[in-house]
Image 1 (cartoon, rainbow, N blue to C red):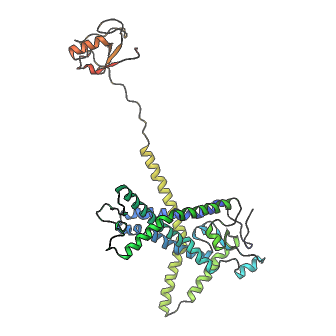
Image 2: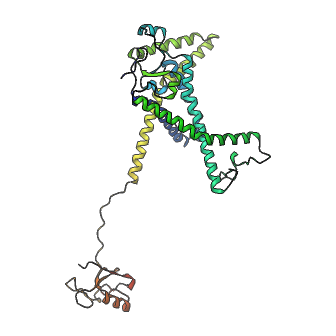
Image 3: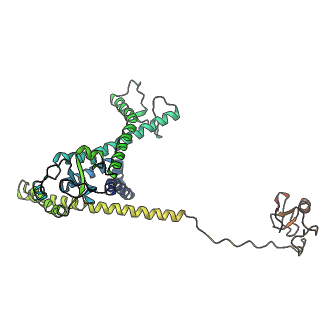
Length: 386
């Protein structure tokens, strides 16, 4: 069943929506990896990694606002040729008239709330997750070290805000409030996380089974359906963006030199935003390629190297003063009888009767054939006489 919205394109498949939802995480991993590599030569870039959540949220705020404003789609959805449409279009309007009137476009409120759901809420969830992890580590250390006040030492001799007891009269109000908030987050976040993930899973399953047209709870709350862009929309997009930018240039005020400067800045901004998608997708591709390359190199280095078996050691040299070896290998060189309870001397490898070799080594402390020093501890029993 194809889902039609206001005469626009068909409903995207579940895998298209899943890929679009997964793209920001891949983009973040690629940017973090790239900045980490560059920080090896430029240490000041470590500050970006210290504020990774804020830096990525600011970048996505710019990208999501730009793509929603120009294409009525999120950053990742626009890469897959998808568009967002209001779900409450019930009037049967001719496609041309609807396009002219703009009836299929998102309202301003829906665009703003889309940015909130795409950028602000994921950022807040990331910060709550980090607070929950700190609180959990504090509880774990308090359990291990028996600190009933929940304090923990960070390994540098300093105590974190969690280590200040609530009974301390000198604790500031801000510190007490911070600790109380962290405890509340530590208690509530698992339930909140489980609820949101469960609802997301339920919506995805219903979308996969064609039971609903909403892929997520956020889209349902905003009253927005995601559909494929039509060919006409893709063709009209460039003219729409050009008209929008021309109107922005016409609104410039001030002297001529100021208008020229503002126009140059706007042109640079437009160029950066236009090529941001291509550059970021290239960064994701480069990151995946480097990840595969280093993973393959590690596998090659960790894989056991198969070498040919080493040649056997040369046979021990029979000394002239030693006891000669009989032609029959089943005969003991000491008693010249068939070996009984055969045993070998490890220093030479020759086999004898156990009683014979034990007596000889006990008396002479050497191998009877090679005359190499030996002890009774170097006698080993042979269970298969050859």
